Length: 323
Image 1 (cartoon, rainbow, N blue to C red):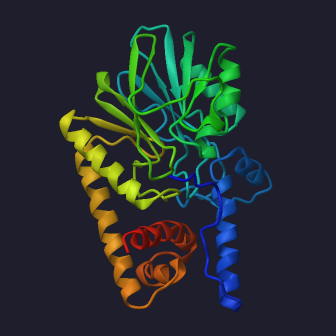
Image 2: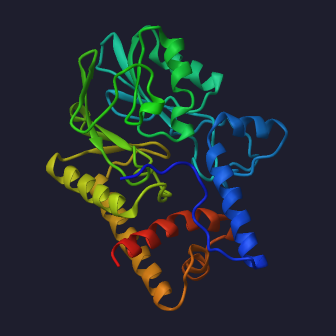
């Protein structure tokens, strides 16, 4: 499968004013998608402008904590990054994971390159040693601060990721890998769909799965990958939830999920329902992602339409692949 990079979704070839406006919307969205949750957004906020302000953060200022900060399981604790936005919900969830009483921990998704956040992660680690840094996927709100955090934590610390461009050191991640540190055991699952380099980490001791952006604490994720892969991933996670009696999903954004099977069933049903709506719109004459969104998402705030177009384009690609 070819790698998808950060780019605007394909747009129809047209010289009309409407076509030009659609292209401008796509370019604007692609730019905002890149800065969402990154340190660049913090700099924009310093001058009083947050184009991706989270609707629940009236001031638009970053740095507010919530009940999400500090949540987790016996072995995993969330450190919430101060980067709330429409794309990152309350902010990016960084996870510090270690066996009780152990002197070494793993850190999943250090988040943006925000010195305050990276220092808070180290404070949560305390007098323990960081054995490894792990990334669920390449998006900057999860990966941007990884290398800097690893250097802050010690010269020995490596960053492991599926995408070689985001590794620090020679060791990556792949399906079936077992990451061990300080007696902790994390099993790696490749789960493409949200991105083609997405992975999950299964923590058997807590019956918990770290899902990155594949499953969120609330709402649904935007696809920067292939819908077919994403549907297969959801089915796989649903099967895992039943076979292993998964107790908790620990997402990259939003609160933890204590009903994994129920939430995954809802995710699968939602994707199937949306796909059926897109198919119907195409049968009725819609030919572009924007035209589909204007029909299927007519009752949704227009500010969210560019994000909807991103996912609709993945659905159109999926339908085209199926003929």
